[in-house]
Length: 286
Ligand code: SF4
Image 1 (tube, protein in one colour):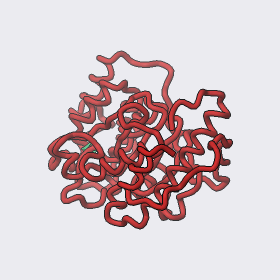
Image 2 (cartoon, rainbow, N blue to C red):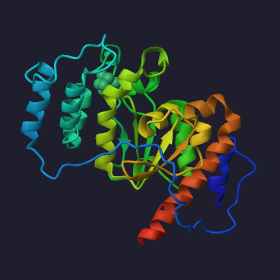
Image 3 (cartoon, helix red, strand yellow):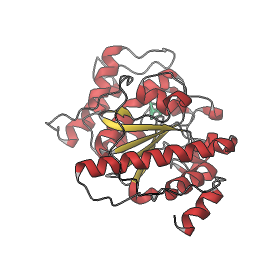
């Protein structure tokens, strides 16, 4: 372990420093036999023209499409036909279309209280994808996910396993707009925003997904199990291996659990390296 890595771990409050006795060239741990059902992301073969897609999406919001009326924020559950129609449109978008759709989105009440949408950041072809919960005050002000103290801790955690935010990961949240007062996301908000994230997963095509915190795990794994019971296993999101760990904001409040998050990162790295060795890819990161 490099001196730099030890310094990073020290800054995370982790100790004693764990030293791996041998390189983690192990096969990927077996996928859980009792996996929760995972969201399935499919990319249709035929892509509409960008102009058609923008028109479809705009028409949906302007009431030009009967299956997608103006959102009713007072309704807890979006009508199934409207939700399916909107999801299908989103699932055909490319990066610029998706970014524009999120920036203009008024599908839930959070659009009325946000300062900025928080789309996501990082390498759009990254091998790892980090999924968090929702923007906080600083993210809302700056339009980027995982900034401030939680962001610094995340960067340190990633560096401790050899990953750089801008090079090796794409980071996004379940919600693209901040819930007022940092309250928990409402189920209806998650349901309306999730297609954006699922499309991001489909576009990035990560080799490994790290689900940080309860809401990310619950939304992507369609479960309400505790973080403790979900840790230490390889789940699946859209046929991609996914590992659950704590959210950096939680670790700032509960520093004793930083050691568990380090275990999760080591497990994620072993899984990643196992996947690479099975696929024959060169082990270039982590
Ligand atoms: S949270 Fe998501 S669904 Fe709600 S307004 Fe923002 S982008 Fe749209």
